[in-house]
Length: 277
Image (tube, rainbow, N blue to C red; front, side, top):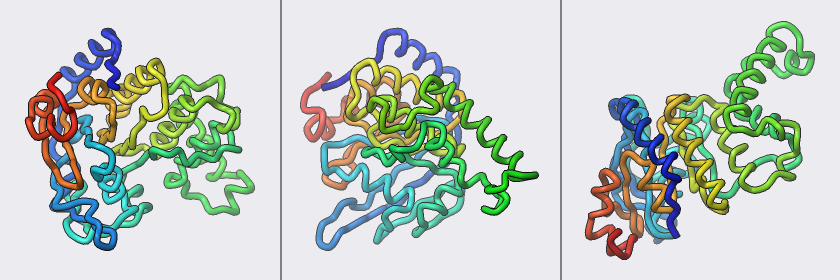
C-alpha cells in the first residue's frame, strides 16, 4: 500500500527541491559485493549520492537494501568493492570510524534506551562531540560543564524541531511508536551528520505519522543540510520526496535514476512495482 503526501506537503516538497542546490558526489559506492557463506546478499552494486539530495534505495523484501546500508556504515565488511566519502576511499571501516567521518544511521528496529528519557536518549548521539574525560564530566566543572551545557542546548533545539518538547523527560518506552521514531531520528541528528542513513523510517506508523515523518525528512534535508539516504517500501513516499532512486532486486541493481525514470523502467515494473502507475 502506498501513501502519498498531502497536497500541501507535496507543494512544500517541490518548492524545497527547486530552491536547494544539489552538489557534487559526496558518497560513491563502487562494485560492492557481500556474501554470507554461500548466500550472495549484494552483487557488484555501484551508485553515488550527491550532496544535499534525498537518495532512495528501494526493492522487494530480501533485495539487499539494509545490507547495503550496513556496508556503508561499517556494520558489514564487503568482500569486494569500496566506498568513497568526500574523496576518502575505504574498503573496511568500523561503525565508530564511519560516525566520526560524519555518517549517522537510524535502524528499522528501534534500538533506543526504553528506560531513559527522550532528552537522555538524544544526548547519547552527542558522544562523539564530548571531549572532556569521565572524571570532569562526573564533577561537571569548568570545561566539562560548559561542554555539557552546549550539547544540551543543541539537543533542546532538536527536540523543538521534532515537536516532542512535551515529552522531553518521558521515558521513551512509554511513548507511542510514532514518537519513538522521532526520538530515533533526533538521536541521529544529534551527531550532526553530513549523511543521514534512514532504514525504513515509515515502518509501523500510521498515515498521519507518515506525513509528519516525510515533512521532518524534508526539513532535515533543507534546514540541517544533511544528505539523506533512505530505504522505504512506501512507493508514494519515495516518489514524493526523493531526488533519485536506486532499485535493488535479489542483491543486484536493476534501476537507477529520477523517480519518474524508475517509475517507467520496465525491469523495475516487473520486479517491484508490478503495474504502471
